[in-house]
Amino acid sequence: MRAIKSFLCLLVLGCFITAKAFALTLTSAAFADNGVIPNEFTYSLSGQCSGSNMSPPLSFGSVPAGTASFAIIMRDPDGGNFLHWKAWNIPASTTQLLANASATENAAVSGTFQQASNEFSNIGYSGPCPPDSSHRYQFTLYALNTTFASEPSESAIAGAALQTATLTGLRAPSSNLTWIAPKAGWWWNPNEGGRGFTIELQGNNVFMAGYLYDPSGRATWYAAGPAAMNGATFSAPLLTYLGGQTLTGAYRSTTGTINNGTISITFTDATHGSLTWPGGTVAIQRYDIVTNGSSAAVPNGTPEAGWWWNSAEGGRGYSIEIQNGTMFLAGYMYDNSGNPIWYASGPTAMTNSTTYQGTWQEYGNGQTLTGAFKPASVVNSNTGSITVNFSNSTNGTLTLPDGRQIPITRYRY
Image (cartoon, rainbow, N blue to C red):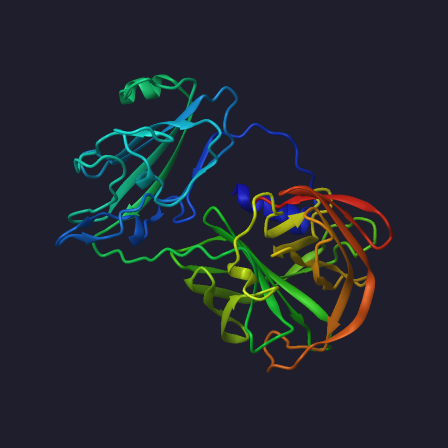
């Protein structure tokens, strides 16, 4: 529900983000709460289960003040409360544990955090392996007011908890679900240049947009999500938004939506997938802004790829990605008549590691949602100038063609 409310703020309501105390949260990019735990995070036991036994990726949110460390306990309440994982002294600065984080730690050596032996007699994480029916697997995150010099009892952990959060995953012997986390940024079909997609995964939710053209040749866009992934598949209504803010106009909220059907993407790996929507099924892949750019290492401090916005101007937003020092961005907004329109800038080399300068361009006359491919053309090569000065990887200032400066930040949904 919170993700939906944020999404409405971005595209419909244009509301301001206000300070509010939220409870501690625990989410996973691999499965939704009460969703199926994918194969990669299940146990390997001859004749019963054959998973990769990686601990799942986990994200911590709304951490309470005074947190000194975290602990995680995973149990199977449908299997005699079987202990699968117990970890403690996770640093208070932690916001996420990557997939397979447990494998880099060991209770017998000095690591980032400590882990106990579970009921499979393994130190660290041992994944689900239900013998008969579907079981629930409960991950409980504890925000603690202390650290521990030795292994604490579960009652000691509970007694030191400032707040707790629980994430439940499901698994049955017949379950067969593969997890894939698509990379954030620009995607396209190389045989359909002129239209493409911005795709981003946060937690287990995808938010995306497609940029293309309407039957009159005018640039237009559609949005979908945020919606939860189911293993390797994302599916959501494909929506048109109407009536919002123009490139240089005063703020105005959107006035309505049109449902164009359903869009589904099944990812085959982190950089490839198959997209099905009202226009049919097409193969998509990550877009190289520069040669081999989508697979290049991203230096620390680089502005994050994905969705950016000004929280006071909900209804329009920006897709930004930098590859090897070259930036490509698009602005999703509306024309004077309230029709959705997009403008692109780049690919252009950054002036330096924190500054981008370029021009907005408007494209037209390309492929529609349901039409055959036809190449797009530039209908206005200079809609206005754009400058972005990044203060860090998640914040910056964008200068519009009329000289007005607006703060932009990463959009979190």
